[in-house]
Length: 446
Image (cartoon, rainbow, N blue to C red):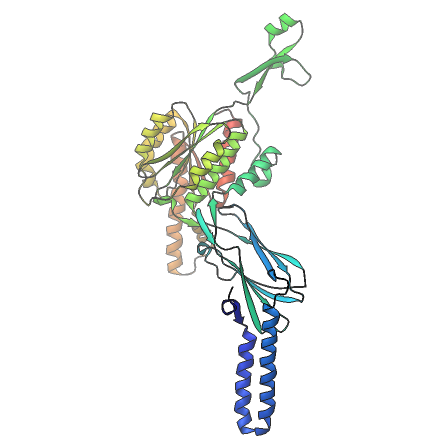
């Protein structure tokens, strides 16, 4: 790298130059200061030259400083993703560092600046986190390290780890968290409720010998007569049930909450639920729709199926149009013949909006077990809890109460027609959806 492109002047130099200008002005009033100021300026110039020699002198023939950025091959949407910068000082003296990381423009951050010091031959790791809120490709620039000596007059710039592209996928970190807790039976730590199982599963597994504690109602009397020993029927949880996540990509899902759109919350929850369903030996599927039906992933349980769902979810975008529920129903009738659990992620703000789609929802509920998942307006809830002191605030609170009541009314109307409903805040969507799935499975409804 050319010296002119790598050499920078520190703020300290400009402050000293301003000081010298003021001293020369003072020397015109007090001539006795003139030789002292000239001497100080000469010393300053020598120190600058010495500083530059120390920074650019390289007797070993290798780079006097090294750094690299380490980040995951893909980032998890809506989660804090770790980024680590490793630094290695190869100078024979202590260095003062300023590190500027050129992160993607999607984060809208211009303050990724670190300052630190390194002793000779010392290494150090700087760690920070990034939270993406949009899926897609993110372009990272260079890690710019500005090295200074103890004089801190000049800086030498070292660029490292330039131009790396990383894809942001739906929240696989959240998916792994739920997966690990589900395997270890610790889902309650994430707000997942334990539901008492009612009755027996209908899926027969085997006939085995009776052991103490077995339910006497499961005794197989014919097998007992043949073997002259008590034999019982063993059952297991029903498996291979089809679970479909239906994701609305219409304009109602564009509303933002804490940086993420409702569509992204639905996508993250669908990924977690699909993984939990596969762990429970069920078959997971996916269907997206807006003004027209999007991609269909047929419910399966085979190696690599979850990765297929992840790839499809990664490509989904809001279409800003009114969703066509008639086309959705027609597609379900044509491609999903077996009775399945359908979790419809959408949003209804008013009862009138529900009434326009209710005929199609009722038809779906006749052929499948339908759960409509839609969102609370958390801003309305906070507005309702605050006291109203002015006429304007009273008016706003009245309107907020009307919309809040309509959300509750939507749940009641759906339940009247035998349609399950989940009204949840975006941050609770995943836990509430998994809760509902486990509840229905425990009650033998799917």
